[in-house]
Length: 81
Image (cartoon, rainbow, N blue to C red; front, side, top):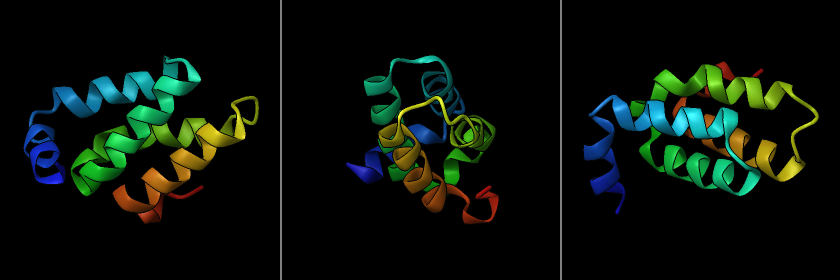
């Protein structure tokens, strides 16, 4: 499955759509999107700003922020706030 997602990630629309879900979706959708972005890894660098905004918002539930941390570690560890 990760090979399939990586091929999809080459299309910039997928990470960008998932980034929108991370920023504006319901919590369960955010967690799902972050899980997919984690699998995509470095090819999803375009959504780092969306992920870091989630990490900085302490009104977002801990589970979502933990999923964001896990995804960011795989995408771009140097971007950790």
